[in-house]
Image (cartoon, rainbow, N blue to C red; front, side):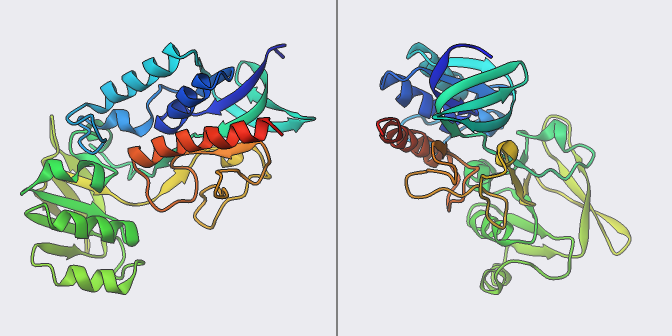
Length: 303
């Protein structure tokens, strides 16, 4: 175990984690960010970001690079290492990493969420080229085009409503004959002339070379090809970080629970970003969490 005790360990190098690192280092906290893959989170898969204030028409990759560079310029350390556990040891925390153990006075878990994938042929290579997991992020790129939304919960229904005001045609594909989401949303979609329900249908494959050209579904034993340029998957997310400590409380959907100060169920361990129970999951709300959580960390460290 290293002798160095960090003031703050941040788990996750996405927008929430890197924003927290910027605010923490500006507050002179000795800060390290652990990221198991590459910094930036899910946004690096977006070819263009149009909804972050002040930075129109920037690619997700460029946005992530700028954010990381800013955090490092202020003095944040970045470690490319997966964190496997957190435990309290006196007034400090022991953070278990793939390459060793580290100590910190406070911890921010900002590991984000992972969208559930369909795992069908053609999907993986076309992520960011028509396959998307965020209608409000990418819907505007499909103005006056045909798209498919996959899912049967409220997220899929809200996505379909949102896209129906932008797109020429919206196919709502669900594997069951009835939706899990609210009936009032289903009724609203039934009244949309450009929305078509494709029920009791299972996505089979995504076709296209450089971008999505169609989605093939199986319905009543027969395959049907939908000519679409965009596919929005709304089949759920998995919150990352819940397994770091058994004492971290989660809600029924698996999102971690924090109070109004972003304090988790473990004093000294804070939450930021999409992994926590919240209403809106966007770049702006992730950045807001990153800024707010450091205020709470500073209050905690003064106790």
